Length: 196
Image 1 (cartoon, one colour):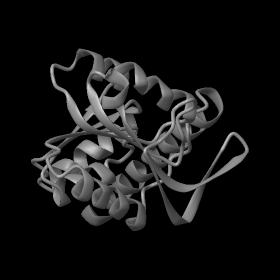
Image 2 (cartoon, helix red, strand yellow):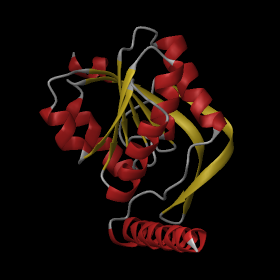
Image 3 (cartoon, one colour):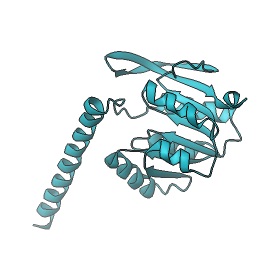
């Protein structure tokens, strides 16, 4: 009888999270017009870590904006020398990310449920690298925080009116956003040049 109750409770928890995730996805897609939730794959994670390790070896603080379940943030923390802050504004995704941080004993990665722009604005720290998975117009708002971010790696979306120093074509996968197809690419921007 105990196992029947346990299975029933697990079934309820699964459906609760399933419906919350569906609501969150619909809310993001149709009301807030945010990019769709897409877990980062091994190729994308590897490319981001390779870029950080090869070009920004001394990066000690990395911020991931729009972290979802935090998989990329944990991967960066495991495979670089940097401490990572994963910012997510959706409560379900942030809660799952915090739980996964806890069960994977992540000490170099921390998930924060807060608006990314408020967090960056109120932070006393400067970030060596920011990794962002946000829509094009929202990503462009990160330019306003060029004094707190040295380098931006934008996943899939180019910042309007700003030329990247490097574009890395991952040659696999894509994201559909506002009825347009965006191939998986990394756009790298050096915000230090904007300060001059």
